[in-house]
Image 1 (cartoon, rainbow, N blue to C red):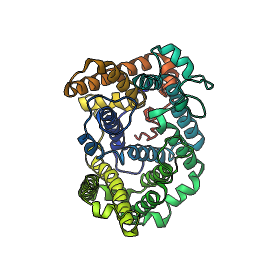
Image 2 (spheres, one colour):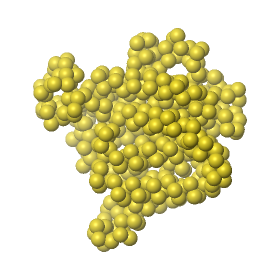
Image 3 (cartoon, helix red, strand yellow):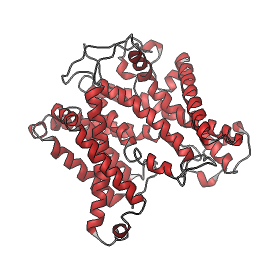
Image 4 (cartoon, rainbow, N blue to C red):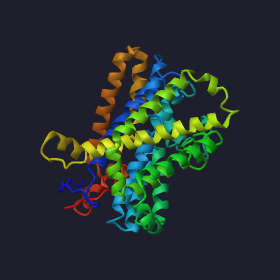
Length: 423
């Protein structure tokens, strides 16, 4: 594994953005907590469910539900934008393909399998026997669980859907790299006030939500997920452009408190609507254009204000060089290359440990901590094993021993962490 080098901090365009690295780490932490919450939240389907579910968890999880995956796309696009300033398209194409496709295939054939197995067991659709199930799972002609089949049988990517999506978006932007960079450096974009750029992305999301959400509900199946593509690809392009606009970065930090207030206001409106406070208006959703436009505006503003306040506060407080010898530096050195393996493993471990603990009928207040501790310990152990075995390192997108010294630590990336070192 490549050893991290901590360069001198600079505010210039080529400086390493430590805030992006920290946000990847924090985003993974939120993702782990969110997926544990999915085991306990009432009325939301998931692979396995606790017998102890809570309706109030929905209100808490709605806080991050609309934008948590958009944050990952935004960060990945910004990293790609920074990297392409120093690395050629063909090299980036090769790096992103290796970092994304091998973990995706390994995840589909190995890591995700227990999720499908324990889900089927919990629904009493199969008999116990993991190896027998695995043989059927990898057989595209299997007759097992026909209601769960895709065009390739039982094979699925489950929580790893982010990997093929970000690969496709990356390839599209790399193919259009020259005109896109020319546009990013044009006088029009360089002089465009941040508020007008924000208005444009708000309009794009509002229009996508208005026209596509009901026609193309979320599938995460790549080929028919058009509302999500409209949302996430717009976020990806916006992140790519944002990374090259210093005045927009500065505006995010300057107006972070305003974004925080607007985000909390929108979140409050969404929760109040969920609890039927606006029922007289919601009942006219299909009849009145003004009502639909108001809903679209709140959805778009909520989505983008949370993203921008996160970037703004991170830019203000986290964009500082890390001391390699203190505790914060140790966390940074460990977590930066660990993000992708932890991402691969975390949901499967949650499903497995939750399924093992469920028959014990442990009170939820204690059980949730056990699941969290076991998941963190399992991810740490799994990451140690992945680093220790070169084949597993290759399968999980990490640099192997022969790559040391040839590649920067920026390539130890969560789905393509391509930000580059300076100094």
